[in-house]
Each structure stands twice: as C-alpha cells, then as structure tokens.
Amino acid sequence: MAEKKLGRPVAFRGGGFAPVPRRWAGFAVFVSLILVAEWGTRAGWISALTLPRPSDVLDTFRELYASGMLFKHLGPSLSRLVVGAAIGVSLGISIGVLIGLFSYIRSGLVPLVAAIFPIPKIALLPLFVIWFGIGEGSKYALIAFGTFTPTVVATYGAVDNVDRTLIRMGQSFGLSWWSIVRKIVLPGAMPGILSGLRISLAIAIILLVAAEMLGAEYGIGAYILEAGSLYDLERLFAGVVILSVLGVVVSFGIGLIERYLLDWRL
Amino acid sequence: MDIRIDGISHCYGGVEVLRDISLDVSNGQIVCVVGPSGCGKSTLLRLIGGLEKPGSGQVLQMGDPPVGSLNPLTYIFQDFALLPWRTVAGNVSLVLEDHGIGAAAAQKIIDDVLMRTNLSDFSEALPKQLSGGMKQRVAIARALAVNPALLLMDEPLSALDSQTRELLMDDLIALWTRQPFTAIYVTHNLGEAVRLGHRVVVLSRRPGCVREIVDIDKPLSERAFGDADLEAPQKHLWQLMREEARAADAELVNG
Ligand SMILES: Nc1ncnc2c1ncn2[C@@H]1O[C@H](COP(=O)(O)OP(=O)(O)OP(=O)(O)O)[C@@H](O)[C@H]1O
Ligand SMILES: [Mg+2]
Image (cartoon, rainbow over all chains, first blue to last red; front, top):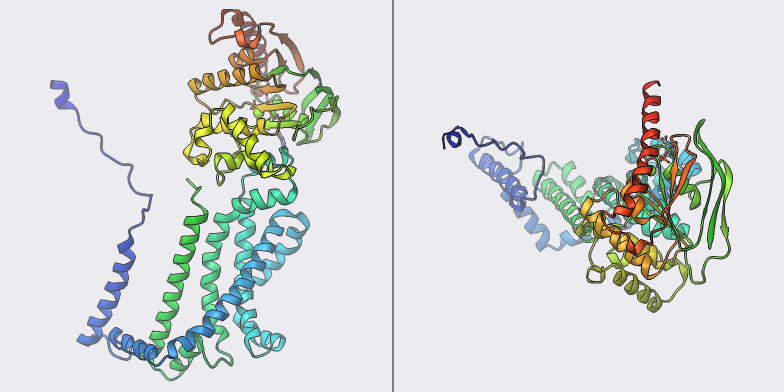
C-alpha cells in the first residue's frame, strides 16, 4: 500500500496537433467582428469615414435586393465566373496530368508555366481585349488564364505524388495505359487536385472584379468599382460582402465534393 | 506452363545485383527464394514478371499458359497495393475490366474468388476498414481472379503479425491443395519457406547467385505448424543463410 501512495499519475502530453471541426467557431469570429464594428461606429470611436456601419451596409444590401439589382449584378458575374473557371480548370487539369505523365511535355512546359505564373493577369487585360474583344470573351479569358496556372501546378504535383506501387500493380496486371490513368492516376491525384481547386477558384473570384473593370455594365465587380469611385463605402462593402459570401460558398462546395469523392481516405 | 530462368544477370548503375541465375519452375510447384537482405530477390521477381528488363539472360515461358488465363504472370505485393478508393469487390473487378469479359461473367469470377478467400461478407468494404491480413487476402483474391499461370509473391506475409501469417499460410496451403498453382515465393522467413516451398532456392549475398537448391518432399497438405520433419531442412537453410549474412555484414564493415 505504501507503494501505491508513492505512485504519481503520468502527465498527459499527447494532445494537440490534430484540428477537429468546430462548426460554431468560424461563425463566432464573423459575428464578433461585425458586432465590434457596429458598436464602434455607433459609439463614435470608429468614424463613419473609416468604416461604414454594418447595419447601414445591411440596409444597402436590402435595397439592392428589393430593387432587383442584386440579381442583375450577380447573374452576369456568376456566369463569367463559371465559364471562365470551367475553361481554366479543365485545361489546367488536362495539361497538369500530361506534365505529370510525359517527360518531354514536362521538360517543355514546366519552365513555361513557371514563367507565366507570376505575371499579374490583370496586366494582360488590354491584350485580352485586343484578342477576344471588349465583350464577354476577354473576361472569360482573364479568369480562365488566372485559374489555369495554379491548377496546372497543383495537378502535376498531385500526379507526382500518386503511389508508384499502385501504378506498378496496374502494369503487372496488364491494364491498358488509359485504364491506369483513369482508374489509378486520376483518383490518386484527386486530393491534390481538389486542394489546388480551392486556391484556383479564390483567384477566379479576385479576377472577376478585375475583369469587370473594363466595359461591364452589370456585375459585382462593376458595382464595387462604381461605388469605390464615388467613395460610397456602404455600397462598396455590400459588394465586398457578396464576394466574401461567394468565396465561402465555393469553399463549402469543394468541402462537400471532397467529402463525397475522398471518403476512402483514412 | 513451366518457367525457365536462363542465365540472368543484372546491374544497377555499376553495382552487380544478380549473377547468372538459372532456375526451372515446373507447373504446380511452389519455389521459395530466400537470401540475405539486398541480394536481389525483389529484383529477380521484377525481372521474371517483365516489370524490368534483365541486363543479360532471359526468362522463358515454356508452353502456353492455360486457356482462360487473363494475366499469366501475376504479382502479390508485400504492401498489398490495393486501390484505397475501391471496395474489395471493386479492387478485384479492376483487373477484369480490361479483358472484355461481360459484367455477369466478371461478377461470377469476383464472387468465386471472394468465396475462396473467405471475403464474401466484405465485398463492399473499403480497404481502410480491413485488417492487414484481410487486405492481403483481397490481394490474393485479385491475383486468383485473373487465373494466373505463375504467381510471383514478394514477401507477401512480412507486413503481417505472426498469428495472421500462420493463418494466411494455412489459407495458401488450402488454396493450393484445392487447385495447385505455380508460384515463386520470396521471403525472409525460413519457416514460411519450409512450410510452403516444394523447393527452396538459397541466393548468396550480393551479387546474388544460386547458392543451393533444397527440395522438400513432404506434401504441402501434410505439413503443419511446428512440423518435426521440417526442422532438418530449416536448420540446414539457416546454416547457409547465417554464413551469407555474416559475410555480407563483414563486407559492409570493411567498406
Ligand atoms: N531501382 C533500383 N535502382 C538502383 N538500385 C536498386 C534498384 N532496386 C534495387 N536496387 C539495389 O539492388 C540491390 C538488390 O535490391 P533488391 O530489392 O532486389 O534486394 P532484396 O533481396 O529484395 O532485398 P530485401 O531482402 O531487403 O527485400 C540493393 O542493393 C538495392 O539497393
Ligand atoms: Mg525485397
């Protein structure tokens, strides 16, 4: 019994380093930031010129909705986003897979991709206007080009990371080249491709505003730019909030796809 | 179908790994290959199955593979090599899909091999839900599905704990007894070699060459765990291996 008294419980030290989802945490951060802003603007220690009052932004937003202008702006923006991103992402995945599979394509294209990745695509907007016209074409091209490069880089990295023993297995069972690509390489690269997609689509939203800088009558970007040039902070913020919500929705959507496609992961 | 390995030598960038290996494997026989670590056993297996080209020498298929053999030379890998995104049945179906057999026929094969490996109840499970032993049984089922003429097994049981290994060895013996298959079985474990092998090929340290071939005549089905008759060959093999391992060790020390 004396021995038992001498015993000391071993201290637990194995915790942490394993984030688990806490649904309410993200929501709480948003709500408290908004509440602080509301409180500050009402109490006066944030001047109206520094930050618009959240409730005013909400009013502006409600007006926008009631007048039907919200969907007039949202419609063209979404279609630009969808078309542009779809072109960029599908080209990016195809080229990325080819770079991942073929030595010559890899050696030929990787330096090229590295060269065009850091170009701010906005700088090329005039060029796109000349090539594709002032209409929708140049906007699609800008968004497609901007999503293309990060998708390529993410995809070929993901293909490189596919377990080689699985590919060897496919070959040892005499699967055709196309079968190996379709049934082993692509599913194996899917986790990397999807996490690259998060970045590419965020970039697509950024470029949407840039694309609408030129000759767009309607669109979230056009709305924000107009508000900005008039220093109408409430409208500016209403537009920014729409972009943020768009970002959250896209990220949530990819989360859903991941949960559906990648449920085989440990 | 028999397999003749005819004077195979192989180098990796100036390092000679295999030297003049010749070996005949006749139909229905399990040949175990043992040898010190790094002597080129896995390399030999890759050469036999055509996953790599030998530096010199050749591997010959003597006679035609049995009709209905979809993939005559078939591997079972140490790390199972199952597609984690496919179910048990899906992993087996993978190797049938490229052969243009109808869905119904494929399903029949899948049901049959899963039954033979006692996996029928798990056909819809994902690999992450399976234990190591079950994963290797799936890999065995997948290999059986293509009706191989020669099974190439590279330490198929060494990722498993010893109890599971015993169980799977019994499974392999049962499968062989029901329907004899031809196999080349690489292992580190002399116990496995004497349980499963009709002959045991001992390779020397690198560069690997055939040091001795030990035939074990007792029928597979009569061998059991801790079999007294297997002790003598196992001891003999251990003598051979110990010399090689010692010498390999000394070489590393001497640089
Ligand atoms: N692809 C390769 N490129 C270069 N060297 C290799 C390659 N594969 C194997 N080797 C070398 O060839 C030698 C034999 O390797 P191998 O894997 O065939 O040995 P092994 O007998 O299977 O060893 P173990 O018992 O550890 O599995 C080793 O020295 C290894 O380093
Ligand atoms: Mg090996």
